[in-house]
Amino acid sequence: MKHVIYFVRHGETDWNRLGKLQGQQDIPLNALGRDQARRNGRTLKAHLPSLDLPFLASPMKRTSETMELVRGELGLPVSDYATDERLKEIRFGKFEGFTADEIEQQQPELAAKRHKDKFHFTPPDGESYAMLMQRVRAVVEEIDSDMVIVSHGGVSRVFRGILQNLPEADIISLPTPQDQVMQFVDGRVVLL
Figure 1 (cartoon, rainbow, N blue to C red):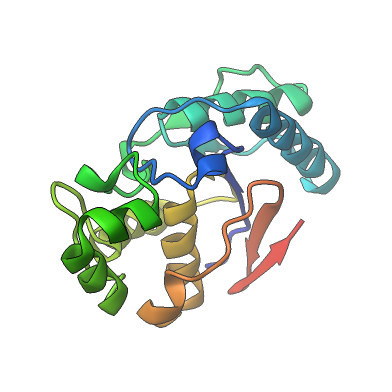
Figure 2 (figure 1 turned 180 degrees about the horizontal axis):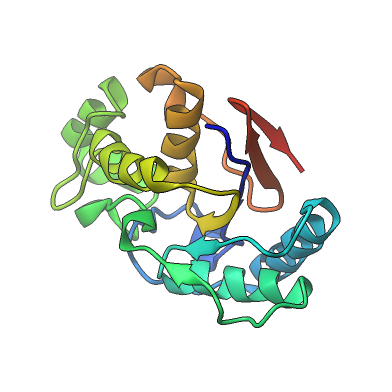
């Protein structure tokens, strides 16, 4: 990709702190998450060559709040950004609201299937990372300028996998920091 993408994962939520799978549950940021979002805004302020570029976010509450705090730190109108449904977090379906340990205890057979092939495993009423990758790839293919994106951990993994052409098995274990900006440039990721 010839464009520079600045990717921000939403700040922490109480469910992040507890290790619960959020998926598409609309959980708000907690106090630490709001601080992380502001910090990421200050980081962008120090690294963006121009503020005249598109800002795009998942429409979920935690990403919208993160984007608005980031834009506030940049001195930009907080609500002047676009959203895209395809940037919503992976759907964990019936696993949403549970920790990995709770899933292991309550549904050991499904947990075993998930461990065996986490990239292709589809939770009940959810979607797999492979499905998420298809939806995010469509967004990546439409990018035609440098851009700031605020989205989710799962989205950041597949986004990075697409841009760096990573093996599926490596994608699901990529780190997804909430307190750093990922800068994608020339097939590399730089943590800011």
